[in-house]
Length: 282
Image (cartoon, rainbow, N blue to C red; front, side, top):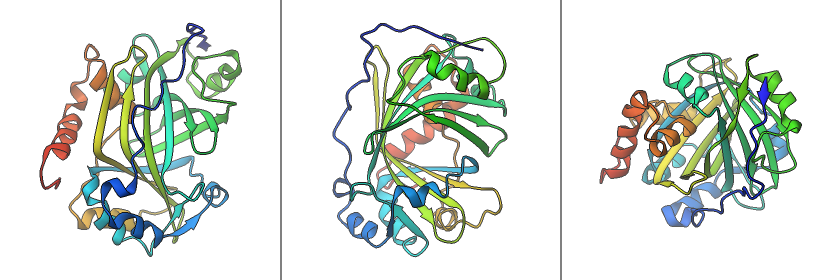
């Protein structure tokens, strides 16, 4: 069962940590490439929610985006909100005082969970979410709409959490904020979403900050009926291999040095390599 973990009444969501990344800041050809993609709205995207899905992730430098997108303009449509393909997300992750959810992931357990509150800053939508990792690549996401981003575990969300977390005593508290800019693509030839997350930034309640400018986290979400993905084929053609990358776990490993994180050291080295190499080739 979920236990409420009280926070000071003055707890506030942190301000945005920097100027939102714009395509013009990356490469002049990117706005043109995005305009070549057929736009869709939230209603069309909702028809392919893919809450029970197979996930494949990639990480690479943003300098490779023009080449990637140029090869995908006939295969995907792009989400536009308020006439922009750049959508802004803010997330607060919850865990136990001893990081039990994180450590379950660190131990390699397949049956693991993440608990988070997420705000979609361009639409004023917010959700409380539980992500359940069922197997190596299958994830089931459950969520409920909330009036605003949830900053502490309250009676209003405990019923939802008790339904979707294992039956045990949990005492959840806020652990890590993140924010990023997302481009969302919807496949034309099957139930598939591709998300491209840029400008990832982390913040703890005590003010520690980590920014990863230049890193892109690409994620393919499919229903499991097939792996025929133009995005995955493009990654293979560019010698960008699938990678394991959990935003929450990597953020904890970077900002909570006292917490065990040796399992994530290969990913941390890969991130450092991507951001340091002049040619940005994985």
